[in-house]
Length: 109
Image (cartoon, rainbow, N blue to C red; front, top):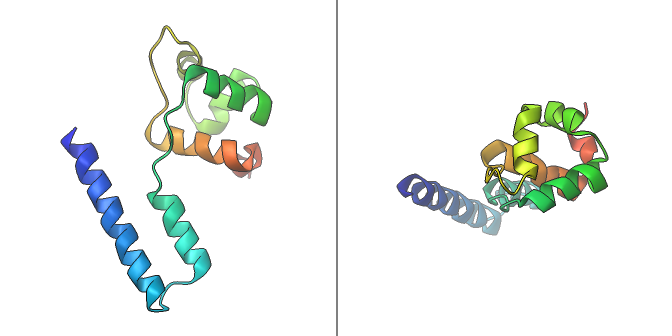
């Protein structure tokens, strides 16, 4: 738990610094938007939400979804299973957030 608190503190300080730089004209509007996106913690994803993102937004199989997120098919299956109690976190949660907001194209080069 202390690591999460420390991480949140660092992100908040980073965001405050960015706001100060923007106030003084040293950070552009697009750069500020990028800082907000980087500092924003991804939401917690339920199994139903992961299924919805995969089937309604990405419209791909578990295998393809796993490949695009660089995780195993087993991991995607566990995320989608309420009994497994495994949820996406870290980089995977951030990637899901991007797919949810911008579509699967963000993961396809």
